[in-house]
Length: 426
Image (tube, rainbow, N blue to C red; front, top):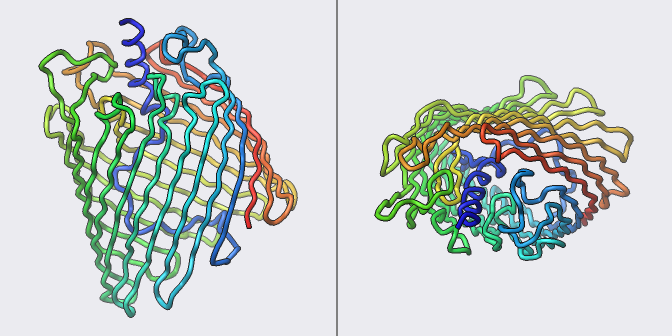
């Protein structure tokens, strides 16, 4: 029983701290492209394939005080992962309409923890449509399957997350640069393992606003967004991984409203700032003590002062669901820097440095064991050497470190990663 409780606790504590935070308001109108990494290949049909081998010193994400054997069936903390990828993309203009089709397969093989071998996939169909100069919009479908990270899965079994999103929008220009728009999207998440079924959900959203896009690199929208999230299966565990007492039933469905400013501006030819700022209110159907209201933001800077150096940076303040087991939210404040130094015509040095502060404020103590609110600091350091052998063939060497500090001693850990990869585009 102790080992089961430990496994539940670890799965709950790990989930949100190690996976990317889910944005509160997913833009229906695609964001403006970054200044860097814009493909110059205008082929209608494109293919890419690649392989990557990674060695993790602590693939489980367990602290040194926790034995992996009772949870995963093996005592090793390290593992080597072989990942593959194959993708195809079709992009074509038909008069004023632009059709994009994308599909990708992403298999992965774990040499030690083979129970987590899986085949991931993703696909997208997107139509950017227009009727004359006045009407425009989008219509699309995204679908995919991915593995719940071993870092967030203490069951010892593979869990596959399947997400499907259908979205659409329509805008009406009443001047060449100003328009009003409406949009809607619906996302469904299903989990393959019974242990994760309490995280199954469906999110339906609607947004409307006014947009100013004069065609000079500036694109600004003022909008209102409403979101409704339904969880068909009740919560089984509290935020510390303990089984809820008999007779206690918790449903994590909620409604959310946000007033947002979405923008993309170019203060100079080598600088673009994009993202959104807003105020968000979330109201749970049960336990109003867990409701949230406050500012949210996601800003991205793309800066290229010279041909030999460019930088992408991101600043985020948001709330995200832990998604697994409890679906209580966490408050995330995060900053990320991704510099690129061009060493030669074929060689680049790519960096990634990030800091994330995460506070588990979604459980007010009504459901969890008494104790301080969990607070984590997550650090990411990484450098990649990339070599373009030819226009369509590239090699990479990666060195990364993931480290978590926490006010709960048993949650501290670090993971050192080294990887090599090859990618071909044709």
